[in-house]
Length: 422
Image 1 (cartoon, rainbow, N blue to C red):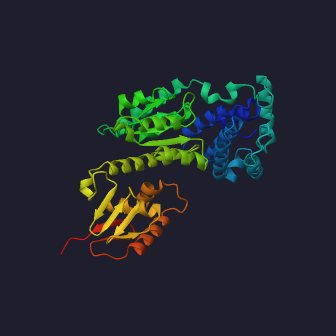
Image 2: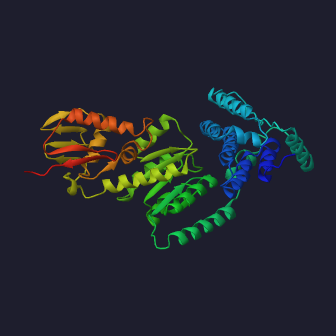
């Protein structure tokens, strides 16, 4: 048999015999991290995502399963997949077929395992022999009555691994940035240890201090004691929903009631997002997620929070900070109206937000990416060109004025310029 990575062979046994998809993720991820220069790196990620996707499906998280499997297809490389003894075309077909089956949404369908299309017969023989040695059955069926298998992420104690990685991260960070102070504490409330660990690692890499909770009962006490700059909430917690926690935080005493909140959850339907935003959440990210995107969203939310908490008198605002007047223009978010020379101008909600944000920072230049993060929270499919379209619409509706204008800085972005009096 041609040589294959030992971790990959373990992955195949976990996948086809023990049906321990969580362990598939663990063993392959560890190998992937230890071999960052391996040319098959992205394909390893794809295999990890297949295991995680099937794990999500088996435990009922169909939205998470579909997103993870779709991402897996994007990461699989045909040449590298074949080098691992798999049929690339058949593997893509198997994954696509499972995605379609999940999306049909048949509630009466029972879960069935999938088998990876192994094209190397010697590899199959090796795996079957290994299973026989260990008393396992090759291509067995999942034990759906075993919660320790179905919900392994909630029952496995990974504390020693987490603590070891924490120590390594902190040591590396101290060596790289010995004189940098923390950007602030961020409270993470999630009952899935492996997700909490990933979030913590990325937060600390970005110079934030992470505080982890697995239950909601301690959230309010922790906020009062630690004064975090932001809270990351899962919605589906074992003791209380993230919705209730969000409501509770918004009812806390000032200024704690204004702490920014990001929902990080597997609930990705529009109705879930709307409910969250109506409760006062600042941003919403659906699992599975890109940790780098989470960090970008955190920074964008914190920038918006700092901007909104600035002294309104510096920007020609009233005491509430929701009405802005510069020269002949009034932007009133309380009554949702814009007046130019006392004449009402009809704007869309996003046009209103964009105008208010730019006018609140006269003279400051924002890139399109900045504005997409501030106003659209990175969620708009049209990308940065939607910023250009909204600026164009604003100029058309507002017209030309001697006292102010929205200035384009070619290749950079936009600013709201206030012209000095003659």
